Length: 253
Image 1 (cartoon, rainbow, N blue to C red):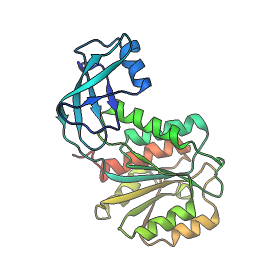
Image 2: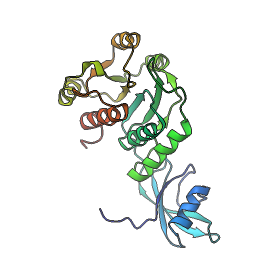
Image 3: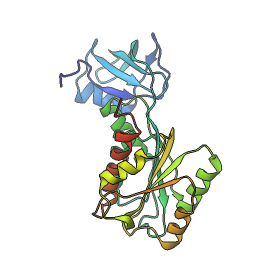
């Protein structure tokens, strides 16, 4: 892969259009001027999840400060597939990993849910968002995964029911272990391509009997296996999103 001439690719919250001047955050300023040793005329790529990706020039305003002059659009805005990830959160480092990889894999919403056997009682939403943004910057994604509040699974399922938008729930059921991943993909192919999906990954202790009964009773729910081995939660996230993307997502395009 050839090296990009731009110094960096950054997410900003500001509107982006030709002629605008953007003030980077304190951390972004440090990265551009101190770490990357940005100079007048160097370029960066900017995106905000709304206006596409833009090329901007670094205009130093001091030895370690600058503004970014927006010059031209490089890519129009596009959205990732409407695929939500619902998962029972795990310990800190692996939770960071899940947020990063789910964003890289194109999840449009990252939703930590509290299950009966979940071992985590609190989730740092800001940390999840920071990981999702960093992953989007690195992977040239144009949108940012939306981070949802840590919610009891029952309430999340109620919310899915209330939306009534045809979203298919893909339940990754560890108790059906033994079915190879290829069979799961074939099972998914048997369904018409849904425009909206939600992928559910359980805790490392599995789903409780109460949760399994609730999930089994859902109408718009596809139960799949991720193979004969019991996967760690963070591994299961990648496996499930890879299966989805290869069949219904934007990989085939």
